[in-house]
Structure formats: C-alpha cells, structure tokens
Image 1 (cartoon, rainbow, N blue to C red):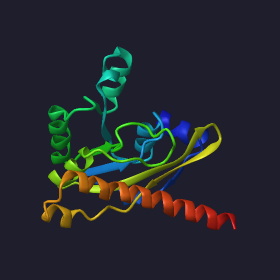
Image 2: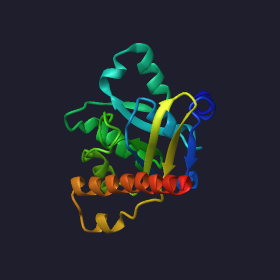
Image 3: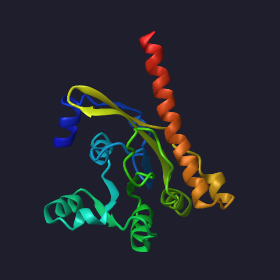
Length: 193
C-alpha cells in the first residue's frame, strides 16, 4: 500500500492493462528492467501477491534480506544456472502463484530493452503459467509520469507443443515486451499531434 501511494502521488504512475492479469492460476509476469523501483511498481497495482527472484547478494544484508523475504522474493545466483532457484520458481507456478521475472537479468543502462536470459523461457515452457509481458516506460522522477503496461497474455501453447528451446521462448517474450513499448510510444505521439 505504501508503494502504491508513492507511485500514484509522487511518481504519477499511469497503469494500463491491469485486467490482463488472470485473477487465479499460475501467472508469469515478464518485465523490462530500468530501475530498482521496477519490482515494487509491477506488484503495487495488481491484486495478487507477487513472487520474484532477487540477486543473492541482496539477501546478505540483514535488513534488506528480511524485507525482500516478506515481499515474496527469493535469492538467485546470477551468472550461473541456479537449479535451486529454478526449482523454487517452478514450484510456485505449480502452486498457482504469480512469479515476476526481469528476463534481462540486470537493469538497462540505456533504457532500451536488452537481450533476455533463457530463464524466463524455461519457466514459460516448463509450466502451465499464463505468460503476461509487462513494460515499464519513463523515468522515476517525482511528478514525472512512469507508465506500466500489463500486456495481453502471450499464446505459448504452440511453443510448448513444438518443444521450443528456452532461448527462443525468451526471445518471444522479449518481443512481446518491445511491442508494448512501441505501441505505447505510437499512442503518445498520436496524442501529441
């Protein structure tokens, strides 16, 4: 609630597509990553509890680690296939929870969407989760609008049936995120005209 108030009144977040998130069942939210504020922003405007991965180093700081645990985060070792984190994420999806991933694995320094790591494709293919692309657009400055767009779910059944590899599945997700950003920019330009 505190985050929602901050993002609503200080950052002036514009929220689009909240209705695209299923009210129940497993959901994999995949978002671009431009700031440390992204995880609380993505979770602040949906009614379901989010679970997400955070780099293991953050859990080594007692206060931050406790806060992250309370917010539904679990540690992942970056730079290597962390089997424990993969198992935990899959288990959450099998339990019908919402897992939020930032496929790029780190924040974009330019604000442009980078290449996604294969983890999100792995989760998308190995679970029955609904895959929802998410785009965060703008800069986190007081009274300077940031837009969050929850896209329509991606149809992953064909990719699952074809036993597509995780890297290609991730690219499909990244294309979905890029499409949301492009559509939003076109809409903004049309509104300015």
